[in-house]
Amino acid sequence: MKALFSSARKYKFLSPLLLLFLLPYVSSRITSQTRERTVTSDKRTAAQPTEVVKVNVDLVTVDALVLQKQTARVVGDLKEADFVILEDGTRQQITNFSQDTLPLSVVLLIDRGGCLDPFGTEVRRAANEALARLKETDEVAVMTYHDNTELLQEFTRDRSQIANALERIPKNHTWADHCLNKAFAKAADYMVTAGNPVGRRVIIAITGITRNFDCGHGPSGKAAKQAIFESGSVVCGLVPKSTGQRMENGFMVFGTRVAGAFKAPLLDIKQLADETGGEVFEEKPEKLNTTFKTLIEHLRTRYNLAFISSNKKRDGSFRKLKIDLTPDGQKFRDKLVVKARRGYIAPKE
Image 1 (cartoon, rainbow, N blue to C red):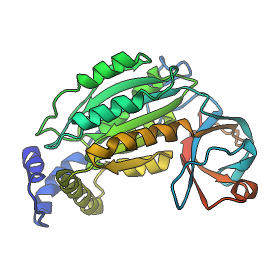
Image 2: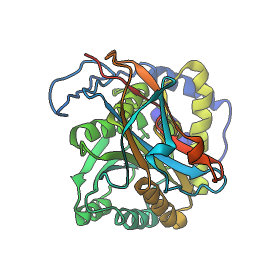
Image 3: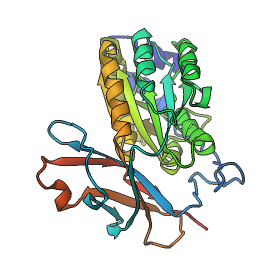
């Protein structure tokens, strides 16, 4: 069935009848299992046998990107007093505020599934040039994924090791799937156990497919999403656009939307980026150099805000966040948009 599904992506036409073949595929994936996650205050011991990660700290940190709505230009001259943080509608007191001072931990997540390769020579060159713009204190890890996920390069600040890892990216597997649920769950796990505990965390996916059904024999997309939230990571995406990519991704978007009526479990990178305050850029491979640099610039100019919740209950509940600007912050400016994560899961005793 998997071969039929994968090969269908190669054709230049779509038929509603294909959905009849997708139904068994969707049904089989609804039973995908979640797995236990392991997280503690020291990041390395004591398992928590549940799908939701419990973080044993009360300080909540949020990365915020502020853009002009009309031009999408970054606004980088705001002050702490210009921001408002609301948790479940209640205003919180900002205890820490900074910009471009905390180190970055970046996981580069590269898709190796499907009949199209999103990581060609031009994209590799763009990645090398963009990552070279990071600070010496920033660290990068490289992961690849298709049916399963592989850590190709552990976190390192050595730019030569990063460049070497990008040269060792394996060939894409034509008949392999794009298992987003497995990839993002593993990236979140690795970020928690190995990422800089005092740094800002970012997962950048380079892929031609932005939505997919959950793959079986792994954590669900829902569990992966929870893991991303608890890791404190901002999710971003880089999509090298081409005619074939638009066709393949269009097929997946169409199929997953229709299958949504059957409650099929899936993961959507654009939705994940939106909910964590990240961005997804789509551009032709030959122009991705500028786009990748723009992404790094946006990461460097984000504001980092922290607060201790006024809600002292340690109940493991999901709490909604809204980061906004004060009237003075908006004054004498065009309409501004704040991109930041929309919530977090409270600690639990």
